[in-house]
Image (cartoon, rainbow, N blue to C red):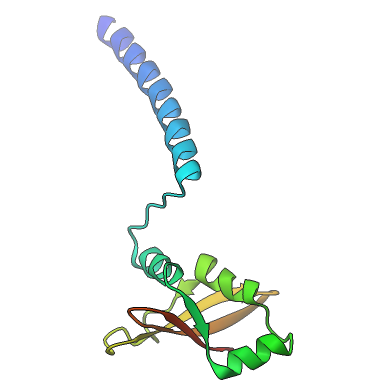
Length: 125
């Protein structure tokens, strides 16, 4: 009986500590903008967001003609899924990635050239 009582106190204290820790870490990560990216998709998108953006001529024309919006392109870099099967990750100096995302209820793909110093948006389908 004493062991069960001690185990109950231990689990109660542990649960309170975990709740406070999760609240503290969540608040800290929101204030500082820290993201914990351990998976390849998250790390690749985070690397792309850290570089200056440039657009190909086709994309620039589409933006000027209002066929596409730059906020939609940013949604690819925030919420997209990198298709590593289609992507060419071994090319040098720039790697080519295909990012999939839902736009207006349709699946769209973004072709991106990830160079060491910049990110070039090639095309959107």
